[in-house]
Figure 1 (cartoon, rainbow, N blue to C red):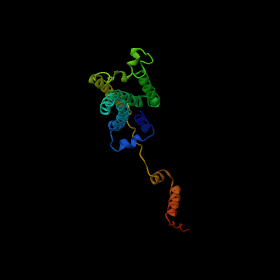
Figure 2 (figure 1 turned 180 degrees about the vertical axis):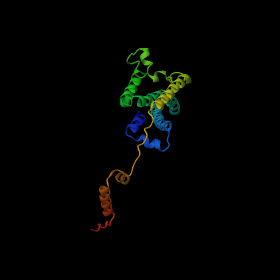
Figure 3 (figure 1 turned 180 degrees about the horizontal axis):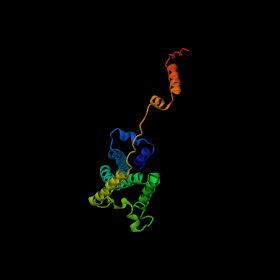
Figure 4 (figure 1 turned 120 degrees about the vertical axis):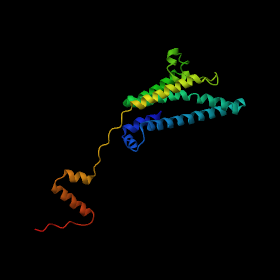
Length: 212
């Protein structure tokens, strides 16, 4: 979440225009954030699966089996994470001032209405269906199905495309003039002479005074 919100932070901080000026496309810029967030999510899921699998395997006497099962159960959550990430990107593009609040509120709602807490709170079915994690296969308790994962991934990609299209185009860069050019073009003759004299003194030589 925080990685994806860096899209908004970089644009608001004025750091995006220099990046785009180097020839990096806006699509590549957004994709780099999405790839970093996706890689981080995979790393966290694998770390969780490894810790849980080792603990459960030590108790049940089948470490390798538990590692395989829990690794698969963790990785299927990626399709739901893609949807969350796409909503964050779209929010950063369409409502940039409220992107942080909206993104964290949406993530909290997705967790609370999902299978982890939705049944505990006895929420109605339509409320639980609002969470993308409700539609992720309940592996290993249930058989794995590719259909809901593909559907969630497609929704996530559509959200990323909407976010990419909604970002405003980069503003044209203002011409940057050197201080000497600015002085010569706007200052009067007396000021230019004075500036030249001060600059000459800083460089270690003096301008001879005009003879009377």
